[in-house]
Every structure is written in C-alpha cells, then in structure tokens.
Amino acid sequence: MSLLRFVILAGVVELLGLALWGRLVFHPDLLLAMVVVRSLTRRPPEGAVAKILAGLCRDGLYGQTLGVTALPFAAVGVVVGALGRTLYRESVVTQAVLIFLLGLLYGALRFLLASGGSFEGLVGYLLRSTLLASLISALLVPAVHEAWLAWKRALTLRSRKAQAPTD
Image (cartoon, rainbow, N blue to C red; front, side, top):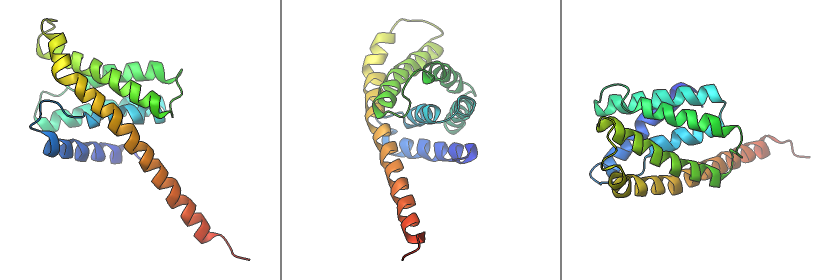
C-alpha cells in the first residue's frame, strides 16, 4: 500500500472512529494501532513518515494545532523503530503488546503536552481513559490485520488457481 493510500485510509479510519466512538470517554485508538502495525511490517523510513503524516492527519481533522498529535506519534515511532529491529515483527502477540504499551506512552505524552509538563493527575488519566482504550486497540487491530492478510492470501490463491492451466 502506498503512503498516500495509507494517509487516506488513516483519515477515513479516524473519521469512522469519531462517528462510532466520539462520545465515549474511552475508545480504541485505531490510528495509533494502524501506525504501529504498519511500522512493524514495513521498512523503518516508511514507518516514520507514516507516523508523522497520520499525526498531522489527526491534528487536521480535529482542528488542533499541527503537531499536538504528530509529536507524540513521532516519539512512538522512535520506540517502534528501536524495538522493531529486535522483535519478531509479524507476530500478532508482538503487535498487540506494542500497541498496548505504546498506547499508554502516547496517552502519557498527550497528557503532558496538555498539562504543560505537569505530572499531577497523570496516573488518574491513564487509568480512566488510556488504559482501556489501549487494551481495546491492542485486541482489535492485530486481529483485524490478520483477518485482512488471510483474506488477501485467499484471493491470491484463488486467482492463481483460476489462471493455472488444466491438463
């Protein structure tokens, strides 16, 4: 998938998530999870660019100051890039654990940006909203990604069987 298609898909997913879960206190952070999975399954420079562009996409959709989401996404990108070389990246468990932990990191960084660097109330914020949102994202996105890959493999296999000459 090209980077442009990924950014368009990121915008659609973010709008879909806003429509489905916009009024809830916690909701899965599908955009963060998509970025983590893409970064684990692609080369490092493409994953880093995808993180920045997805963060700018979220900032633009919500009308925030550009960089409020992009900067924490970049920090998450640094962590994924550092860990991605040493982990079994295609594992669903690896993806789920990273999405959960990086969701917590992202929530903490967003809180610190909003509070001006004050740690007061951070634990309550993480327990109230970020913990459950990270858990839902960690369970949902790798499963959907695996189902998508299985569907693509089945389509490829079916098309190869259709093209194979019969004797």
